[in-house]
Length: 134
Image (cartoon, rainbow, N blue to C red; front, side, top):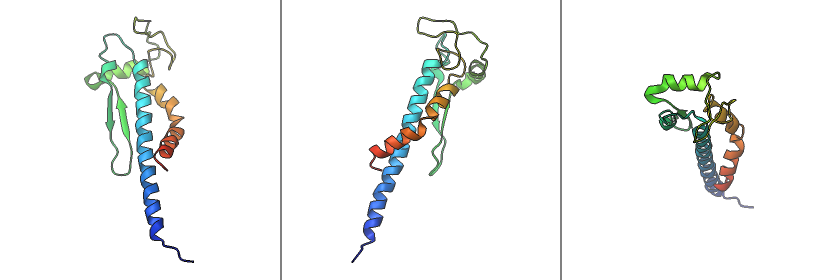
């Protein structure tokens, strides 16, 4: 029996690339889902807060890290809107209601989708790895 181990390197290299691609696509998919849901939940009066969403990759090398935030120069306002669950966000023409986190517009507009979608993160990444050939 003759085994050519260079085939292992070739096959493993393709699998490694597929896994890396799948993980990166999966993270992109997770970030897209979180940001879309957060945009549906962020309080909306004049649109300044909802229009201030930022997505910033902060990882280096093999580390995949993404920072999602709202506020920019109005970060203190964004923080109050996010954290103070006693604030009322009455219904508006574009949607919204007095809310418990995750229902309508109001507090925890970023935390809630991160927590909910984060629970599915492993499955989302696995599906993307499978699509990439891993």
